[in-house]
Image (cartoon, rainbow, N blue to C red; front, top):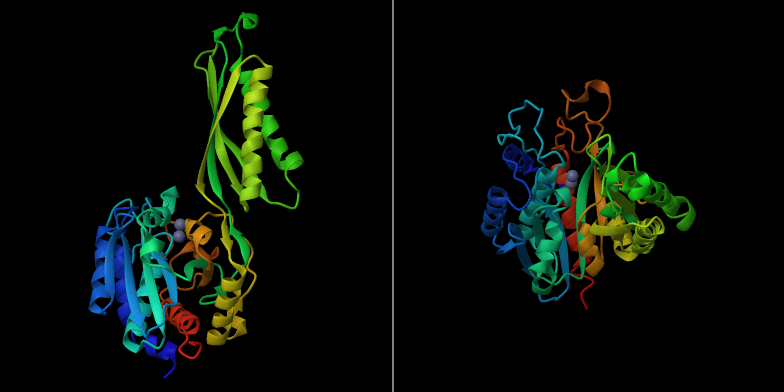
Length: 402
Ligand SMILES: [Zn+2]
Ligand SMILES: [Zn+2]
């Protein structure tokens, strides 16, 4: 029997697990029920279970043979703070919370792989199953698990993560070497002038005029300072100043976000933003200060591991089911913290064109991530689980062991 056929025998069980997790979504660092469910399942299947990494994270360790080679497979567990619009039986029972990004499916696919690998142990080495909390909303559960010694306690030669993608054909696996997802940063610029009567501007230093100059100058970083080949976004999304028609305020605040696909471009933009904020304010006799917070780094896939993972997909499912060069994705993802420390790759599995959601979207296309009508496609469960098993059996192949 093929590996896929073997896992497909458990399809109903996997669907039940996925829908149970979907019905009880939990937010970042609050994944108590979900992580307990995961830990129980791992223990039942005979794995060594470690809980409490990054508050609610769980690691299951499965060993076979004598090899010290190791691999890390990661699934995220958290849901979003948004109401669910679906009315099917497994819709959210927790008001204001929803598995709108499919992390219920990611967790279940990895659990499906655990079962097969624990029962067959057709590999030689160590598999670390990483169930991560708090991917959403800049909460950086990945970083929290690392701060609790994830890779020191559970060394991984390489680490892999998989996310579903609506609009990509169901079960197609998409890879991209190099920069694949954007960094996410936010900034505050505070301009301090001298407030006064609006009819006596010569006796004040107007921070509003300076703030508008700064907003204009910031866009020059995108068009005049960075290499036009590099992609970056700088959006000012807030300006706050003043309360009255006839008062020049003492202060103006500018806020916004920056997205880049490399640390070098991010450094360039941050440094130049600081120069503009401080020097332009100074030029007008005010003071300007930049507070720049880097939330998630750019996600940069390692070429060797990306090629290897795509080869495994092609061997498992055929070339027609694999896209080796999907376009970069503008969202951010905290798996990037893992990839700063450990080789690996982050890839996508098509969630389909929406056919599995008959009552969704009314023919306007597939229901997208973070949409209140979204649902993970249960048809992917055995495919994703099979892929994880194939990846382990290839990375920790018995034959390749010296
Ligand atoms: Zn998401
Ligand atoms: Zn997600």
